[in-house]
Amino acid sequence: MADHNRFAFPLFLLGSIILSAGPLFVRLADVGSVQSAFWRLALGAPMLFLLVRLTAGGFPALPQKRGMLWLGIGGALFAADLVAWHFGIARTSLANSTLLGNATAFLFPIWGYAVARRLPSRSAAVSLMLAAIGIAILAGHSASVSLDHLSGDLLCLLAALFYTGYLVVMGRARQGQGALSALAFATLAGAVMLLPIGLLAPGAFWPTDWTPLLLLALSSQVAGQGLIIYALPKLQPLASGLGLLVQPVFSAMLGFVWFGEWLTGIDLAGAVIIFAAILLVRRPSNAMPPVEKRVPPLLGGAQTPD
Image (cartoon, rainbow, N blue to C red):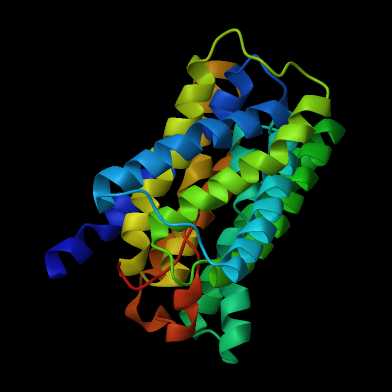
C-alpha cells in the first residue's frame, strides 16, 4: 500500500497535466463552444462505460431512484459548468481559462472545512491564501489588458461555482456507486442535458474533423480524470485540490506553442505563487478530517477505494 501511495501524487499531477490540454482541443474543434462541451461528454460516456466493463467485469447497474435524482441534479450542474467554461475559453487565454475554471480547487476545500466545523491549520490557510493570490494576480492582469479577457475570466469563475455545487451534489450521488461508474453515469446525464442546448446554441453542431473532439474526450473525460480518480483516494483532499492548479502552467505552455500567448512577468509571478501553495499544502499538518471523503469522482477527492 505504501508503494501505491508513493506514486499517487505524481499520477495525480500527470492527470492534471493531461487535463490542461482540454482548452486547446476546444479551440481547435470546428464546432461551437457549447457543442464541443456536448461532444466531450457524448464521446466520453461510452468510453467510460467500456472502461468500467473492462475493469469491473461488467457494465454498472442503474442507480436507485434517489441516486438517479442526485445524478440528474449533478448532471445539470456539470452541464452548466461546461457551458460557462467553454464560453470562457473562447474569451480569455488558455492559462486563465484553466486557472479560473479550477477555482474549485480552493473553493471546495473551504466548503469541506465549513462542513467539518473546524478551521484549517496555519499552513493550510496560508496555502489557500497563496492559491487565491495567484488566481487574483492572473485575473487582475487579464482584466487590465482587455475587456474581452475580463468577460472570459468571469465566465470561468462562474463555471467554478457551478462545479463546486456539482461536487457537493455528487457526494450524495456517489453513494452505492463505484468511482468510475458514478463518473460514467454523470457524464451521460450531462450529455443528455447538453444535447438540446448544443442544437439550439449558435455554432456548428456536427464537426467536419472529429480528431480534436475525440482527443478532448479521451484526455479530459477519460485519461486525465481517470488518473485523478485513481490517485485521489490516496491523497489529502486539500493537497489534491490545490494540485489541480498545475494545469494553468501547462495550458500557458500550450497557449504559447499554438497561439503565441506569451507569459509576462506578472503571469510568472502568479504561477510561482501557485506552485508555492502546492508545495506548502503537502505538509502532513494539512491533513483534513474524514468528512472530506465525500468528495465525488469527477475532480474527486479522497474516497474509500472500491
